[in-house]
Amino acid sequence: MTMANHPGAGRESRLLAGEGETRALAAELAGSLRVGDVILLHGDLGAGKTTFVQGLAAALGAGERIQSPTFTLVAEHAITLGRLHHMDLYRLNDPEELEGIGYEDFIDPEDGITVIEWPERAEDWLPDRYILVQFDYVDAGHRQVEIRRVGI
Image (cartoon, rainbow, N blue to C red; front, side, top):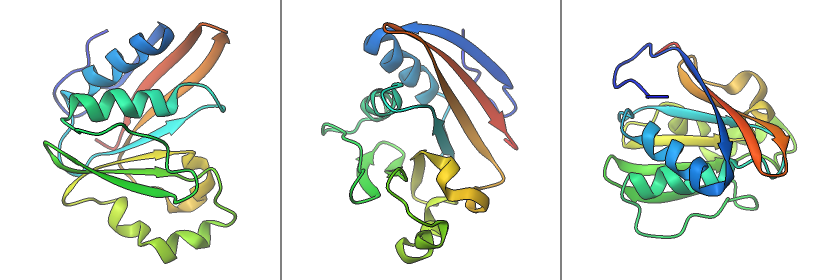
């Protein structure tokens, strides 16, 4: 699969075996990203979402190890495109809590890109344009990953 370097690349899917392939796919996607892009990561616990963010961040020049901000909800990292805003909404109790963390700034980032794990917890607070990365469990060593651009 080749991720196109232009908007409207559509839908692409790949069967991944292990963390290395997950990071490689993320690095491939990183090459097509632009300031202002929002990436939504959807999948069960252990599906590879944080591994994907680690690969993405490394490809975008983050010089630090990326961990999921499960308890803080948001972590920011310096990257070549400005800032990587990494959100993990797993522990979000109510979508209204997003207002208190300045969520609007993250869904339309002017200073980099935003990656949101567990976006379904935001309910109606999601942006109109985004890149959806869907992780589906196949077996212990494999995930089917689909990347779909919406409104881009």
